Structure formats: structure tokens, C-alpha cells
Image (cartoon, rainbow, N blue to C red; front, side, top):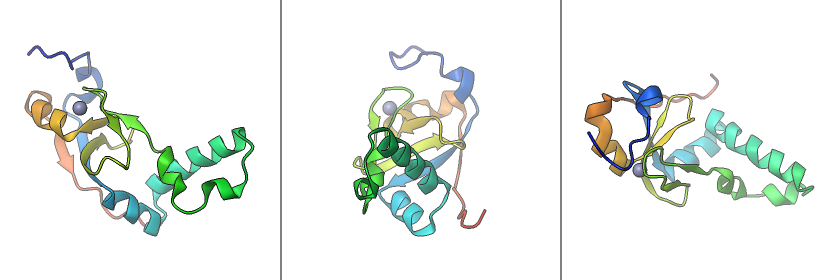
Length: 122
Ligand SMILES: [Zn+2]
């Protein structure tokens, strides 16, 4: 299969299990549950605020969400919470795939999609 988007991703994505993530719902749930995704994003925001020597004010309200920023592994499209809709990511949340690339490559890559279970308290 030839496609400009393919660039060796099979090394780490062949047969991978992916979570289906829907923004903004996924984030709203993360905020309510203070789950690991929330913590990961908040940690990144705190580190940035520290570096920039900004106070607590800087992270007030929902500003933390702006620190989540990934790219689709295939087409490089930005994945942020302002892009509403479906995305897929590996279970360690390291690699993200937009829904268009997911549909185009799910068969050759043999992905399995898993619901991300409620992880409150885990
Ligand atoms: Zn893509």
C-alpha cells in the first residue's frame, strides 16, 4: 500500500489496541473524575507555568485544556480539544490518530478498539 501518510508507523502501530476518544466529552469527564488523563494534562500545564514563572492564576478555570496538543501520526493534523469529534490513541496515550486516517488504515493495521473504562480511583 502506498500513501504519503505512511512513514514506518507499522513498527509501533501494527495490531495496536486503540482507545476511541471523543472531544470535548472526554475532557469534561476527565475534569469531573480528575482521572489520569486530566492529571497528565494538568502536570504539563503546571510545568509550563513554573518555567514561565506564572502564578496559580495562569491555570485557573479550564485553561489547562490548552496544554493538550498532539498530532495525528499519519497526516500530522493537530489534535486539540478544540477539534471536536472522534480521535483514536494508543492505550499509553502517546500516539494519536484522526478519524479519517483511522478509517483509511484500520484494515491494513488491524487495530482493535477498546472502550476506555471509567478509571476513577484506579
Ligand atoms: Zn490523520
